[in-house]
Amino acid sequence: MNEVNSVAYISICSPKTSPGIYKKVNGFINGANKCGYQAHAKIIEPCGVKGNILFINKVLLAKEKNIVVRYIPKLGILFFLAGLLHKLRNKNFYIDVPTPMTNHLIEILNSEQSGISKSLNIGLIVLQGSIPFLSCKKIIQYSIESSFFSLFCKNKILLIGNGVCCDDILLRKNSPSWPDKTFSIVAVGTVAMWHGWDKVINVIAEINQDNAIPYNIEFTIVGDGPDLQKLIDLSEKKGISKYINFTGFLSGSDLDRQYEKAHYAIGSLGWERVGINFASPIKTREYLAAGVPLIYSTKDIDLSNISDNGMAINVDTSLNNKLLKNTLSNMHLQKIPHPDTCRDFSISKLDFHHKAKSILSS
Image (cartoon, rainbow, N blue to C red; front, side):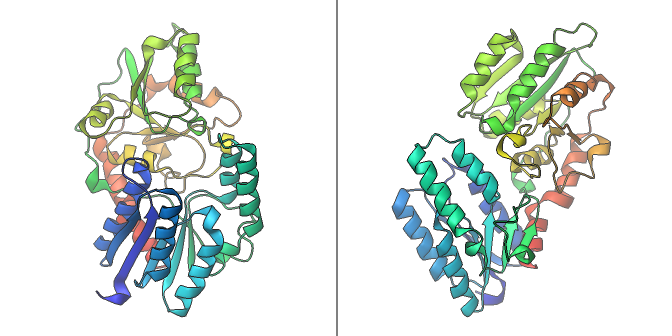
């Protein structure tokens, strides 16, 4: 092993319970290898205290020159100690922070944990503050961190968009014909409040009852999650159940077929519910890599320069659904971007090859 070019990404995750994280870790490794590094993943299965101990062991004993670890807030002080240890060993220690800490606190508050567990977790995270990040080389972040949790370490933060492994995603052959009597949209992911897909259902209820709009909208939601029943109940309440399809979790060719049928994909539209106003979801990158243009909300570091050609349409739903409704009710004026256009952008800007290079050369 060439120690100078060696890379390890260490994370607790599983292809079954956390497929998004698992794909991200392996995507990063593939991207680093494309850049000429000798990279490999060290993945620990989630198994409570035992899993945390195995994780800490691998982090402390890692021998690679470049060590990337996925952050676990409750183990924050151990990350600080690991950073000091690897600094003494002349190694590069990177902490990958998937969610800004302030937003993580909001997620805890909205979780189903008991009141005592919430208080203990929040108290621990607040007491640690920015200490866990002070000893690392770089803090990899995908949204804006608060001043409290970035105290004394703002110069270490590398703000970057999430990546995607384009080679692993099948490019759809064609877009469905348009204009047509039905405008088809798809959303994929954990069915939770921050996706804001209830907003889409509410808007569809208005549009599909408006005879002046020359099409109906059909919405397919792929995935399971805590808000699934709420969306089913909402579609029934609005009287549009026949237009809203719930497939449950899909992967492989079953998921590919949903992409083939969709004119556009729907990203996350409810970030304001967890206090996020800057994000780069992996799923939106997967949509584009599959050749599906998307409708999304909030700021994205990678997508701001492609909205003009229709590949990514930003709708601000933080105040109300007016822009979302205006967009979805005027799609007959929109030309559907060709799948190759979306794919080419993904390869040139979003692939893990570029993301890994940006991180490891920082």
